[in-house]
Length: 142
Image (cartoon, rainbow, N blue to C red; front, side):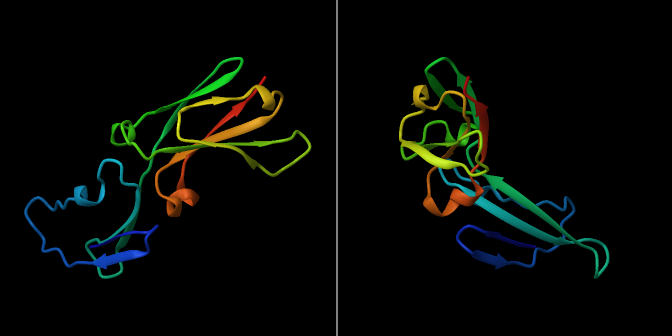
């Protein structure tokens, strides 16, 4: 069994003895207010029977959009009460293929009055090194 935090490039492999239940715990790596992307590798019945599983432990978002604001709600309880959570709104103009960062906040209510008619997306994160793995929620601002 190998597991590690891919964002921190911190991998460790451990040989886990087979038990009657064939279970192991990743809970020490999936802590509240601690983002992680884990790569679990385990051997099946044969020598060449190797399986991989990636587990992303990052904030997942639910978005409410009204005429003037986006309200970001964190869906997974491990991240609902984190004091260091940051939010970013990225938008792109209709003729552009590139999103650009327009607002960075530490509050889950984002004004969108200046971005009407644009396609935007929102993400939330705690640690800067996890930004590439942060989940985006897409929205079209009327």
